Length: 63
Ligand code: SF4
Image (tube, rainbow, N blue to C red; front, side, top):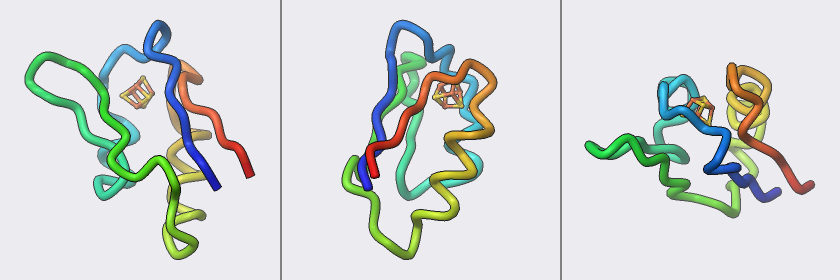
């Protein structure tokens, strides 16, 4: 499973970081980084939850 962000839509509010900090990070310049674009199987459920929880719907999955 892969996770991607639409950087034009993301507002760097870090909801996803709170739900899956191993996968998402927001830097000091309010830029979201995807640390693990290829999501490990054991994190898949949490990443799916983070994708659904993004208030801007900026995240998408490729199964
Ligand atoms: S939850 Fe959505 S808007 Fe917020 S930092 Fe993550 S991708 Fe960006």
